[in-house]
Image (cartoon, rainbow, N blue to C red; front, top):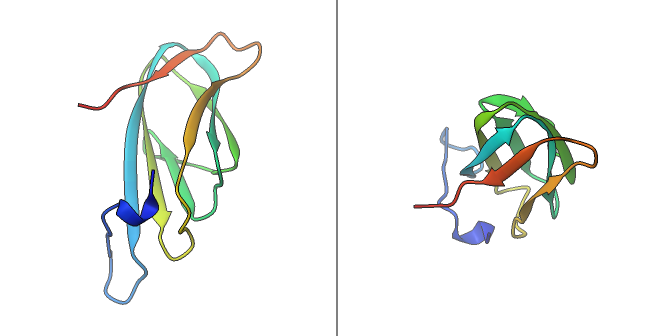
Length: 102
């Protein structure tokens, strides 16, 4: 997703602009899964409102139901496009898929 095309959000006057991206995961069987980023630079990650340390490969322990993933992007630190992939974790029973847009 091209960062340059995301809407800019300025929280306080004089601060660098941010961008926010949100998507949901459908977890039909609980367990471990991971998000794989092309780079975690400039990304603050939240899963169901709780902060998660964003890394190039970010492991998640997910419960059954819908998980909301929020990326807060610091546009001063991040100019390259963002690619996020959902991957299985070997040996995990988790069944997870990305919920499509409307």
